[in-house]
Length: 347
Length: 93
Image 1 (cartoon, rainbow over the protein chains, first blue to last red):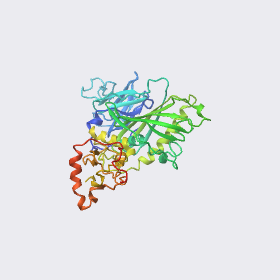
Image 2 (cartoon, rainbow over the protein chains, first blue to last red; image 1 turned 45 degrees about the vertical axis):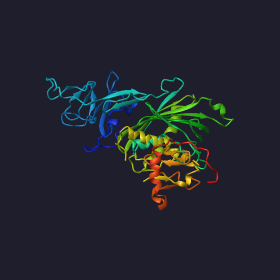
Image 3 (cartoon, helix red, strand yellow; image 1 turned 180 degrees about the horizontal axis):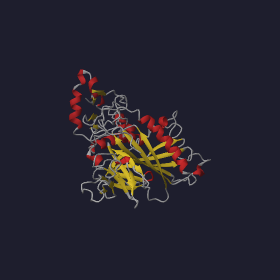
Image 4 (cartoon, rainbow over the protein chains, first blue to last red; image 1 turned 90 degrees about the vertical axis):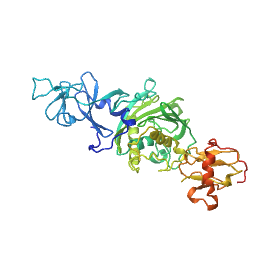
């Protein structure tokens, strides 16, 4: 179950920019064969299930017969069974059995409502419309030097754009992540940085900060971030991590990097689910538990602050909140959302 | 509503303002800077850093300086962006 809320019929319609885009709605491991999983995307309730050929299906959580939720049903003989009258739908979304009339072919109109699906980076991506872009590229995914770990899901009772903007913000570290990503009593002065835009989205130049526990090795590092936003709800950073302490420098190398690919599932305008794929090219001794321990802690801290932000919907009117020069990337993000025609989830 | 550069910048052009502006809305000629009102987000970051006290929120303009609102709008639209610190025209402003 990854649906935070039950959505009623008068929920706000999402913009084409979000409907015609890919969104992560589950990790692949959350959808084993034989199980129906619920999700809500942009206010639409969905089911996910994996057939015997390992193909994942994402359908509207609705049986066309009498409007019951398929998520209350079950899998039998590689079909989804509606819990109300037992109608069965196969992987082509076609109804293959009406149990009350087993000798007749089911009506042709008896079909589930499928959406398109892809599995990438251990994540299940779906679109409610027709995506105008492919699933964003995680730059380190095909690089064998990097070990990858999925982290999350993290349930934020907060707007997806606010949550992404928090992820691409380097000035909250000393306060929200004191002792981990920054030092409260000695916050880094952020040097001016640049923001670039191209067809793949937005990107910063390098941003340098000191972090007492900047990666999973629990050693102080000089961190150099490059942030990117690929899509409105998909962001990324590549963080170079250099150990400055001569006595511990041998614990790392010159090209150590810790990269994070973040997706925010917009459950609705004010709830989202964060999922990560983390890639590191150092610390062969680090276990998945080591990785997740730190990620879980950082994102719990993020959640606690982002859930307090008001208005809940991100303001795209740049005069509605104050933007400091150091917020240049967040500002560019809001301006970009506006230019893409996003109004769902914005104020 | 916007933020306005006034005549105290003329011949001074210290340009500390452009280093704090988050939206690069300053324009300049060879004597002074102006703010492009359609781009200014009214964060007022530039006001306290101006050593000549040349920058005002439009609402706070003294009556004799109100003319600068339209001068900024007219001049800014025809001038290039100034987003990096320049050598001041004088050093005692």
